Length: 473
Image 1 (cartoon, rainbow, N blue to C red):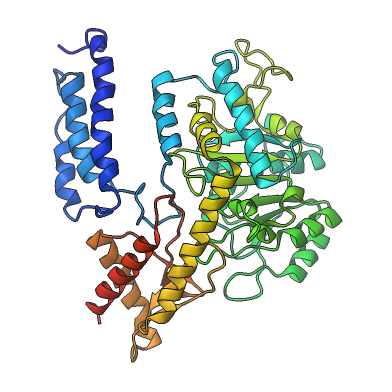
Image 2 (image 1 turned 135 degrees about the vertical axis):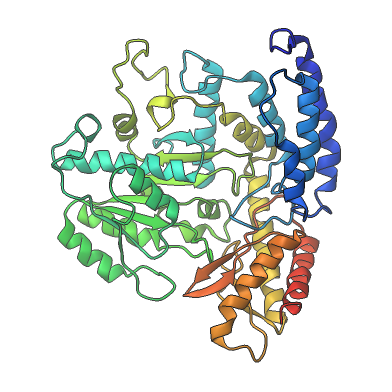
């Protein structure tokens, strides 16, 4: 019988087994397909009943390495353009392995002063990177969805207090519906956060002035004038075309009408790192809460996000004060991050962030962002140069919104044609991107966020799209 205790001596060999597999996998990323066309057959190797007698540490891991290196979607490679997913920088990947090795209880300062201190340091570095005041509170989260949840939970606590209610202790009963206002750029992660918080997935009032979803500022002001205390959700980086809400104007409205301004900057917050795009997030420092992702443009492994809140006490109010006897009350010297966010059990996700920021610094991350800006423009230029492709929105950041539009194909048939093209790209596997709907039309919207991506990858991707498109028409 295999038992963890009797197999303890295999622990170093288990780590070596993974390390030995890494070079071949990483070296193959630039030329390998993003997803093997026979992936479903490969996955069958994972099937079978739960073993009565285990295979043992090394045999089990060897099988997982065999299947995983063949069947994994190579989302850390240079031609994965779906879902706005970055790769893992060498420093971040190494630190993530260290995170698993050390396996720290990161939520409590008493359990791991190391993990808590590292989180405090990286939150300070991130605020510096994005030009946010050092006085802001913050917490690391698993994702931008959790970061949105964190910021909007703080907003909910602030709003309820305006009505004389401690929503953390007493809940929402007896309160009116919290007014939430946004543009048509509102992301599903913000809706999910509203759903979890009991505020309603569809509770946000959407105020737009065109079919792209741009915010109607006049309508926003009229709504604020009538609503009383309200929450505005601004969007820094819309997922279909990379557009931005006018954060500075929304901050003016929030100040004028006493509203809470939350900014969903899942990837768009990184515009702050470059002088070329910093204007897109002008006014971000005035927001009451901000959400962003690390596993997007920071290029650290999943899971990684961060939330910042202007008033740290509101963050503590929303998530702390559990009254559990075994948890010491938080003070200024010991920061328990599980009382500043939605998680209690937390891995030390600060370590990959610390490593990548320490390794490449402010200038390295600026250079990466600007390289991606250039690559997105290159992609957009190639689309415009191809007679059968149509650029559907200006390239303002790192997303290229386009569609297949051959001569002689009517508008009614184009949506179905582009759905077929999107599926053909996924099935083919050489490059990876998906479809979306923008201005009511089916489009492709590759996002350039991976540190490995080169100009050659862009040119190859456009060639593959044109090849597959030609096979459909």
